[in-house]
Length: 228
Image (cartoon, rainbow, N blue to C red; front, side):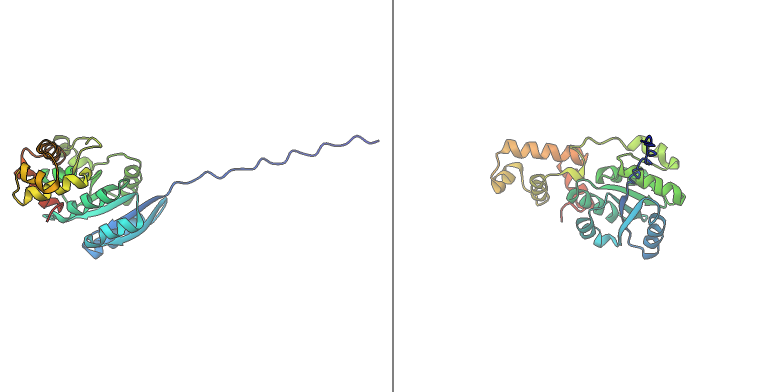
């Protein structure tokens, strides 16, 4: 009997390396800017799930559930931050990246309150923008170097339980009644809560909105579009 020649080892099967795709929604009131951002981001490992105006943003975030919302910021445009705050309130896993032509200290402060995660200037390169989007999706905070010094004085890491985007439904109810001029006792009567509980809600509102008093809370809530 002839000895059996062993069969050569079969080549080991190779497992493809999984790729991670970052889903992105672009929002801006200017069609040309929207198209430009979409063209830059619709490549590599980024999936552009939609492009819309600011007015359509909340609806699109609800429908598409993107990982990152990329928003263009015009000068003197408080609507951008209102949209970001509202979008993050309805989609807990959403990260927000703002692209602006310029930024003042007030802009940066409002960005923090609204829950913006990263803030870039429109002078960044396409490669830098794509990199920032992917890193923002992973929980990093990316800031253009030219505004980092301004940011250092105004931007801080917000605790998970603070910030306008973390207001509860009950806190929003209390906030609306404060805007109508009701006292803590009147708010309690309207909502069936004790005065102590209302006081706690008011204190939480001051912390989350980063304001010193009730008047400041109402003013900031109007600016962010949390109440009407």
